[in-house]
Length: 444
Image 1 (tube, one colour):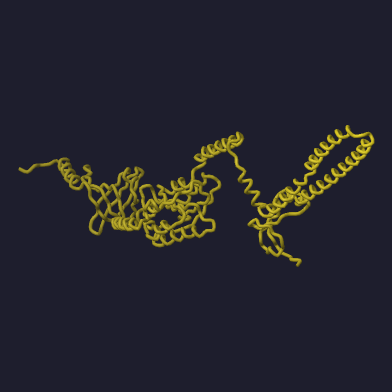
Image 2: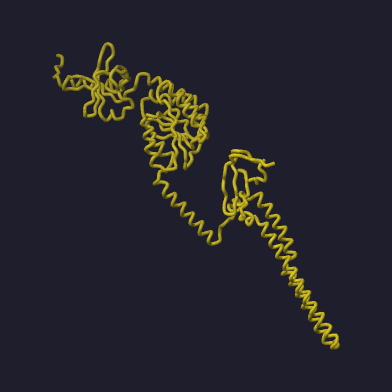
């Protein structure tokens, strides 16, 4: 006799066979009757031209989907069959959804990845260092993209010295690769080139991000002279442009965080720098470390030609003046007179009175000659001292004169050496004035 099943028993047997036999299936079809109640689950029907099957994506699986299903679109659904016993109906419990053609894109992705790797485009030796404190940041993305807003929000928390330049680009579709490559080139042609470039885009499907796997975009990243940080899609998304970039960030916001440290990070660094500065100052006060190099260089830049010549003349005059210094000559003559006086005094003790009178007269004449000689030397010393002061450049400048130099620091001695539009510097005794020549009038 054949076995007689209850409905429950038969349904349980069918459920066991169905779920064990179709524990993992892939089905391609079009979505219809898509609903998403407040529970977070997704309910829809997968159909083709001849049949249909109910499907569900539970809330936890829906949160992990890379592709959000759309009504009327075709996809490849991965999951397992399950039987709902109260109604005796079966459905496909979907765990992953992939657009039709994604498998072909994955194969193409791997082919390009292998090809570009053989060219050395992903080698670590080609990676450029990211500057620790960039002043100018270039951004390549769509001007209306949410990624651009995310990046700006992060950069607004960074130091105020940052200069941001957006080079807008299309970041999805057939025209995107050429647009992205041109946007990067524009940043390289700026007079003030950025210190680093952020290549960013928000999340999307593999098709949405496919332009960042294009050879033109990847080569533009490899050929860039400026370091590049990529922040494309979400953390689970990886493009070939990410692999070629100098640093790959998980998201656009993360790229902005990596490009420059925040204020809270910089504060202890500044404090450490201030501490080192105080140590250097204390070390200077203790006489351990000090150099006059920067002051010497500054003085050399201002007066390196004119003042060198004046110093040479002053040194010559000083040498000549020292040789004829009145005080030295007077000291020598005083000693000679003192010695002579002692000798005369000793001799006077041995001569007759009449000769003493004659000696006294000669002594008086000698004293007068000494006084005249001293006066003459003092006048000569005073004259040379005044000449020396007159040739001192600072005294000359205080009388209203100035030294004119060009932008290389060369002294200008004639109007014919200047042209309208040139920048010159006027060196006065108390400072330097920079000026631009409007007109040159030559008198000869």
